Length: 70
Image 1 (cartoon, helix red, strand yellow):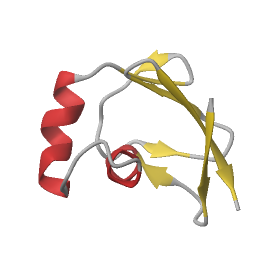
Image 2 (cartoon, rainbow, N blue to C red):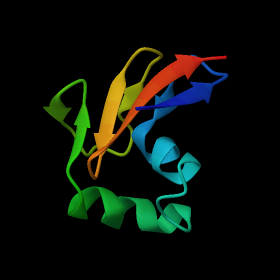
Image 3 (tube, helix red, strand yellow):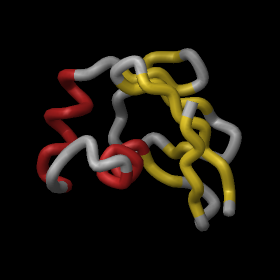
Image 4 (cartoon, helix red, strand yellow):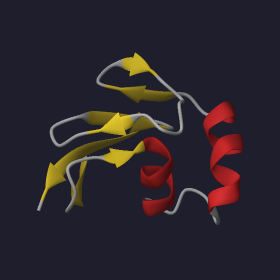
């Protein structure tokens, strides 16, 4: 599991996908989210605007991330 440090109160799922360099541009986020299974705290969710807070666990393509505050 990899820690993802954020400096804000939360990060959206779309921002997280871009931050992790899983897509090349913001325009690719919607397609990426529709084609990949994403689990947030064990529940499937692919909403681009989903707010993810520190201590949330995110799984994307069998890679797990824990959101932590800086």
